[in-house]
Image (cartoon, rainbow, N blue to C red; front, top):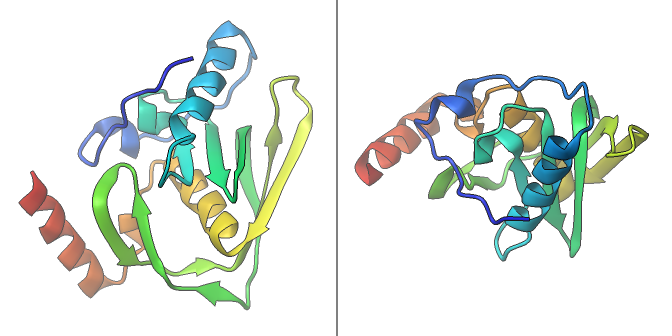
Length: 162
């Protein structure tokens, strides 16, 4: 296992949709170990594989003292009538937080390392995390979901950090 370096905004891997995992081999097992170790630090809620430079559909989470992972996740349900619009941040956009509207509840389906179906669901922070990480795997950043004026401020703040 290894604590992996986080790729930051501007790295093309973050904008590239991730490939399905077709074979659960030693490489995928090692990826899961790295995802779990890298997300298991203070201030980290979720981590997608492309954030550590791997273009495969996998992510890990660390919410309310629960650390887990899912392979080939697909967002299959979100609440349509309850939303949250609190500040959201991202390890790949370090130090910046902006109000981002997300569904209150989300459910993801995928598989585990044994190829068995996994369902991960949650409200509030867990719901936000599931949506955020699935976006990463589709090549999106939370910045893409910001309202126009907020996005303009976010992009200016990112340019000032470079």
